[in-house]
Image (cartoon, rainbow, N blue to C red; front, side, top):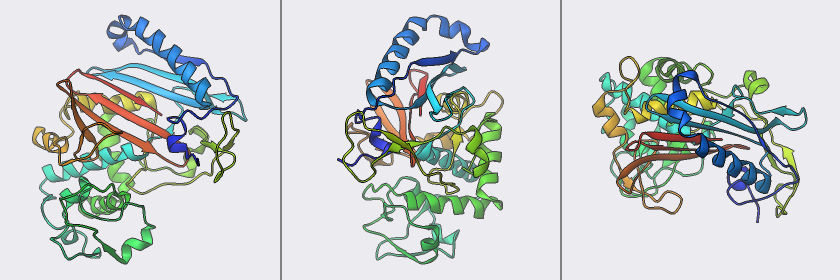
Length: 350
């Protein structure tokens, strides 16, 4: 079986690298909430150390948050095995497709400002976009919910200047489309009248206080980014305890998955989700837009479980608890976010 980095951890592939828990910290403001969870943290660290030893994952970071913010950020293993650099709280990781929910929230802000009607054909905002379809027009709602019928596989950005197509009637079926979310990046630029990276930083990272995050992945981040690894024999069956090699570095500036962050910063994002868009001062989006952001739009299983997709997140009702979830897979990074809005707790790992 040919294993990609995205499923490398989940499939239990192994290497000879044994990894132990290295560092964790609890901010002063959360000591009271975290104190009662210390036995749980200890068991979690034991599990993660064992899991990483079994799978051979070089390094990992984990953040836990509640409605007040960061409960705990933990770091494990190595950010760079060759240099012997361990993962630190300030080490950045690529969060991949979790970026899609950031994009969706920016579009919700633009909706709040009266600049976007989700039900209008998207080509009205992007007249250069050509979509060949025998069905009704594709709207921003369709693209946000992966129900536009656009190609699932990502296309080179140059391809967006040509003619796209829809495989089925918009709104009827779920087809995960990175191409669609890359289009949404251009929609943000058109509506906000500034570059995508600037919009994401100004509208998302700054209000949330995510000062250790970046809206796009550039060469300037390499010195503080964890090194990505992949199986050495790419294209060949990956053996148990097989060797790893450093993966190719790629700059990413497209909306489908461009954000890099740290565990503490991702805790700030989870706090915002747990508070339904409310910030310590003011709101990121209106209550109405947050409700729309998390409203199930189309049934779509999440890792084999019953779920629906909203705008950039899978939404599940599990035991009466509303859960917002998504994974992210980059060239050599695998991430996941799981926010229990009802229970008031969230977790992120990469």
